[in-house]
Figure (cartoon, helix red, strand yellow):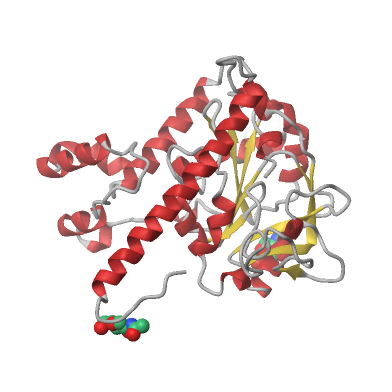
Length: 381
Ligand SMILES: *[C@@H]1O[C@H](CO)[C@@H](O)[C@H](O)[C@H]1NC(C)=O
Ligand SMILES: *[C@@H]1O[C@H](CO)[C@@H](O)[C@H](O)[C@H]1NC(C)=O
């Protein structure tokens, strides 16, 4: 898990206010839809909304920073009681529209794939190379962690056509949780959530999608350059195969050959999710655990069994993990610890916390199952 090496650098440059506004607006939209209300309708009809609905929103709002799963209010139901079905738009997309003309003619293209990169200005040349690998069949979103966004427009023509979201010093999983709510990205068949330091000379996006479809992969990643050291054996690109789904050597850490990190495993640097898998993974991302460590071991819970059949590495399209160290400097010196050490320690701490939460949730779940089916026995796994 080399996330340390591919994370944000520290920059004090003041952010572009327009972009910040965009981020804020998008955030509001996301949040609004989270509550089952579209932004414009909230805006226009707030005064006419029943008071108790507003109150219940305010209440659910107040507790929304609790990381552990809270009891979700089924707002869609509340909403459906008050609105005729025909006017409810419960899902959205990230398509850009015009301010004029017939709305029906706004979109020349409705991309079915979404790709996001978490970026800093320093890595712009690599991102330029990456973006050029994705045709107009893809919606492209850049999450900026250093507040520098307008420079991109000056330098790259494509920059004017992609979505920029600028929030300083956050991680990929923080952005994903806030801006890629499943109902917002419901139009996309596949979602790429990539880091900024990936070499894409041997990668073709359309071919990648073909492979993923052909082999029924719900969660995948491109193989990693075999010449480089890999953290996990399974992610290494292989010759003469299109995809692979398990390690080719018996590793000591694998008590079960069908379980991570020997199968049903991809790393968090360059995952690609199907729509269904993403809906599940989004729910598993914890609000306070921003580094995403441990997620890769839990992803198998988000596909149907046998999970090792649905999660895999694409070998024909592969990437080079360039391991550009930067996250460390994003931290803060504290208690005699260097910034880098502080971030690293937090990554490990989050990993342990995440595992504990998953274990506890699973125990609770099985306990409730046993209560329900007390007349017969349930096998735990
Ligand atoms: C975009 O998708 C369409 C439909 O799947 C396909 O025919 C076309 O070749 C794709 N574009 C590129 C540049 O691959
Ligand atoms: C346990 O009981 C429930 C309800 O009676 C039933 O639906 C389920 O199939 C049973 N499971 C097993 C493993 O027998």
